[in-house]
Length: 167
Image (tube, rainbow, N blue to C red; front, side, top):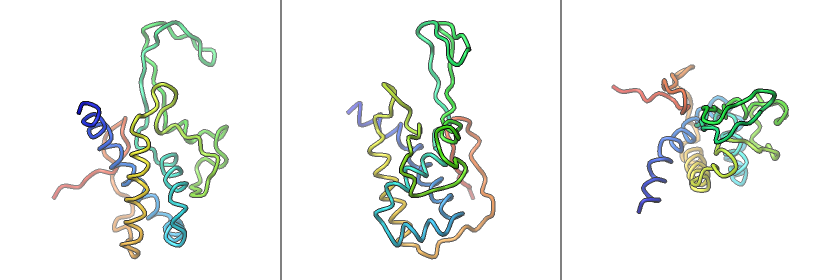
C-alpha cells in the first residue's frame, strides 16, 4: 500500500503537467497533432520529446555526501546541489536543435525523470499515461484549438505546468 500511495501522490501533478504541457505544445504546433493522428505509433517518441521540450519537473536537489569537484567547482560534503533538468534538456551539446520540437527525435536521452539511482520509479506509468491521454485527446477532439494566445503558467519553480483557472 505504501508504494502505491507514493506513486499516486508523486505522479499525480507531474503526470497531469506532462499531459497539459504536452497538449499545449502540440496545440501550438498543429502539424505535430496531425502527424500523431495520422500515425498513432509516433506517440511514444512524441511523448519523449514533449517530456524533453516542456519537462514537468524543472529541477531536483540533492545533498553532497562527500566533497567532490564538478566542472572545476568544489562542493563540500553537506552542501545542497540543484540540478536544472529543464535546462539540461535543452543543452545543445546533447540535443541537436534543442529549442526545436521534433516529435520523431530518436536520440533523446532527456533527464525529465532524473538519472541513476534517483531515476523516477514511476517513469513507465507516467509515460504510458501520457501516451494514452494525449493520443486519445487528439483522436477524440480533432478540431481542438487554443482559446488564448498565452496561457498563464502556475507560479511554481520546481514543477512546470499551466495555471488552472478558477471561476
